[in-house]
Structures are given as C-alpha cells and as structure tokens.
Length: 270
Image: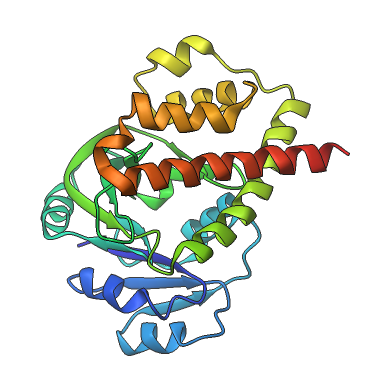
C-alpha cells in the first residue's frame, strides 16, 4: 500500500473532499502548520495521523516532514488539501508502488481547474509533478515552488491529480501569491548573490524535467519585462485562449503574480 501526506493550514473547507479521495489508504498523515479552524478535528475524525510543525519555508518544511513523519509504507503520495486523487491515478499508483519497483519516484499529471470548473488544459504551465516517491530518496530545494531532487530513476504514471487552486476564491489566491512572491524574490536574489549559473542549453533541451524547469526559471528571472512576456507566452505559446475566458483570466493572474515578484525584488534591493 501507499502512505499519504497532506500539508495543511486552515483547510477545513477543502480537507474533507481531499480525504475522501484517498480513503483507500490505511496510512494517512496530515502535516499541519498549527491550524486555528476545524482542520485537526476533521483529520482526526477521518482517522488520519496528525503531525504539527510551524511553517518556515517550503523546502525546509517538506524535508522535515519526509525525515520525521513515521510513514507505515515505503511509498508516499504527497498531495495538498485542494487536490483530489482520481480513480485512475489511485489504480495506477497502487500498481506502480511495489516492493520490487526500480523507480525512486513517479511523475504525475495534475489538472488545474478554474472557478467555473474549466480545466486549464492549455493555460497550466507545469502539469507534471513528482508526487509519488520513496521518502528516503526525495528532497526539496528553494524557499517556494520547490524543486524536487530525486535519488534514482523516475517514471510517469497514468491518471490525474485534480487541483482546485481557486476553491477559496480569487482574493485568497491573490493573497497567497503575494506571500509566494516575497519568497520567490528572496530566492532569486540569494541565487544571484551565490552566482548560481544557468545553462541556456539545459533550459531548452534537458531530458530531466526538474533540471529543465530549474534552468528555465533561472533564465526567465534574468529577462526584463517578465510580466508581459509571461502573459503573451501563456496566451500565444501555451494557447491559453483555447481555455476561453478562464484561460485569459488565469494568464492575467499569472502575469500579475510575476509583477508581484518584480516589485518584491526591487523592495529587497533597497
């Protein structure tokens, strides 16, 4: 079987449906950052094991969880409270997570949905995530939007992880991304101070998805006019317009998020 890891902070709205989608697991862990709503009550009523730790940054928090939470099984499926495991993904994960499997992790395709239920099929920038893994073979880097570093082979899984980032509304999404922008700006400036190099070739041609994404980010953060570039990239290259009004709105919100990062960089440089 597979252990489940769910990160929470005041998730009383989304957690019940999330827990229902992974009710097939006999080892569910809710990793909580001291919620003040009914999150813990809901988790405990569902039979989940609760571990609490004050949140500092994404990579440190996730790495601590993998190292200290007593998982029952050698494989962990990591999800957020606003995500749901589809039936197809459940079946594929159970089939893949065998004792004799040669992989250290599996990449899963995530579907992001807008407020009206539209799948942001084209607007979504990064649909693949390393979410099923052996915890002893996984670690994270970066303060926010962490990069997954896997020790060993990686394969892909069928099925979808469904994500509802707007379940709490546009205002919540914006407030959360203002916080993300601050951490993203700090990461960018820290990397520049450490003179972390990037490879244009790896950003375009690397076969390793994680490596490719890292170098694409480092390249992108050196380009002026990023908010506008991101908007037109999403609309014209990713063809977000095919997702209709939802795609246009999401591309606009992503360009605003990028502008938040630019503003935070300017503030931190002063």
